[in-house]
Amino acid sequence: NMPTIYGGIIVKGLMPFNRATDPKGCFVYGNGRWHFNTHSKGTARVGRTPFCKKDQMSDYAAAPAGNNHCPKNAEPMTLSECQAMPAIFGGALVPGKMPFVSR
Image 1: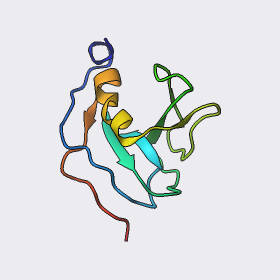
Image 2: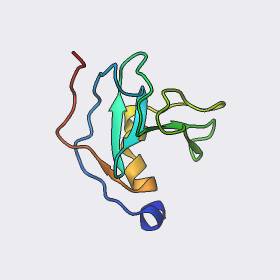
Image 3: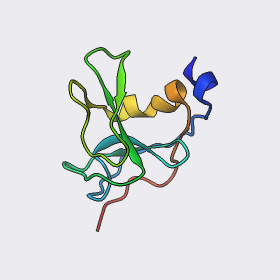
Image 4: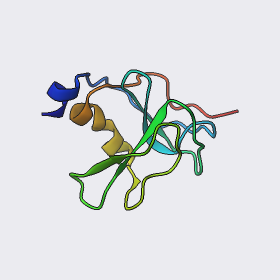
């Protein structure tokens, strides 16, 4: 079980946000805090690690930290898939901070 291996807890309330200054889709930032950005392009940002799914739902791929695109043969996750990541890999969802829009 991944939470046992990686630690972390699930925090209720992850909601998507739209910010041009963060990576697109599901990413982890800081000490295992999961986020989901709906911005159509997003951008690479230091300290943010995008998480993507491979062809099979049981396979995941992390892009290099500071990147904005999924690795080859992987695609962005949906919001609900991103919400499941703390249960699989540990960490916590960011509660009450979203949605927000980049100004």
